[in-house]
Image (cartoon, rainbow, N blue to C red):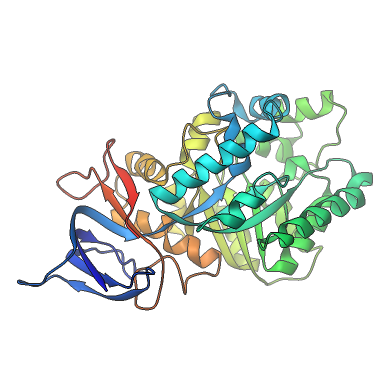
Length: 395
């Protein structure tokens, strides 16, 4: 048995830290007991900062790690998609796999214990299978032409079978409203819902909203110039279009775990529509990616007022300079300084674990769990994150 003490121990059973809190754990990381250190109590290490459970990165594209530093910033979503199309295959398979392996190791050492990861190919499968990090793999589906729906679903079924061979939890998931025909959006959702989980890029950019609501804008023009079919113009927020396509799969309510990612253009109407039919909906924010692409952030005050289950992701190294969860939290704290530290850690740990239905293992520091323990240092005198804050895995 080992015992550590931290100036701020966040078990995340509640948002408040235990001051000079201790954690006792077995050699395999199983938590035995937590509490407040008393006079004369011995311990193996004292951490002058925060100790939190292992992070849950709720949205990552680890297979795009070879694209670090290659993308121009501030291009908007249409310009970002152009760069993806141009640069996605600009590295050899060997270089792609080397970048994946490097960043999976960095994520683990920085304290990520579990991750919801997007895959469009099998480049990351062997690395995720060998990693001590738990991953659920969402096999993202694209296709704007209705007649291609069956062929696309056949292809992703083959990718799913390969993921299963590696022992990964994996299933298809739809990408977004603007990259899929209505038929494919429902078909991919149906396949994902069977697994109990969906991850969906929702209301990520104003261009996406203009495309769906008005049939205009940069993204609409890009698709039309390329001769691609465009989604129906609904006059409503794009999230409502997604919900309509879900209801082609089965009638509400939906008890499956559904993750809506980005939410930059989220509105109260869209929140209400989702709350009306989704019983287990989670809302991922990836702030540094949103700033990278279009210098915008999700309406976090709106999300908090509605009591939404917020999770935190890093997105990919095509739209981020790093995959650092502490950087994401500091970005959020800087933009929304009224958010308590404990609430930020709940988003980055507990809520992500609940989305993955892995809360019995991850997300909080409690007896019998093995969440991993992470030391966050470089805090200010009030225990808040600073520009110098970093994270390091203890267990």
